[in-house]
Image (cartoon, rainbow, N blue to C red; front, side, top):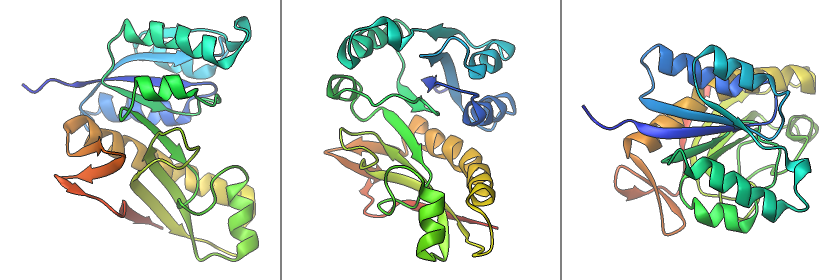
Amino acid sequence: MAKRCKTAILISGSGTNLQSFIDRVAEGELALDLCVVFSNRPDAYGLVRARNADIPTACIEHGDYPDRESFDHAVIEELDRRQPDLLILAGFMRILSPAFVNHYEGRILNIHPALLPKYPGLDTHQRVLDAGDEWHGSTVHFVTEELDGGPRILQGRLRVDPSESADALQHRVQAVEHQIYPEAAGLVGSGRVKFRDGQTWIDGKIADEPIVRTYD
């Protein structure tokens, strides 16, 4: 039997994306070994989700450290005890230091609620509506030092209803995220997708464009 990819999931809040990973693993649809769920907030409900699924948890509060670098060093020490092959940022509300990103180069995934490279940063749903875009969605990408700028892996998109609110659009995009994030992580965990020389490789070839899934 092939070795399962040891995966650490980093959260700060309720953990809805985390739950999609837990469910897919439990259903046998995702061959990842969820070795730890880490949070920088002890009251994060995602820690409860993890404990309910018998996944080990760890918590280090960022407020206990004088700066981002010292906090990230402590997190590295905690995670390295678990020897993860892959890190999933699932609502982890911390900007990672260059030292952290470099330590886990090519092994950190993030999801951003936009069809990158369009709309990096915040308030993506309202910005899409204001621009009158036809499509919106979410992008799973490798993490680099450039915020929301790492090479893309997988996008899920849906048509925008110009009459809907930003909140309604956000709700629909979150449902897409729960589909594409575990899928992308599974592709990386299986070795079909790799980070090499600052680029995404899919099935042994450089991927200039991400895989795209279209949803209703």
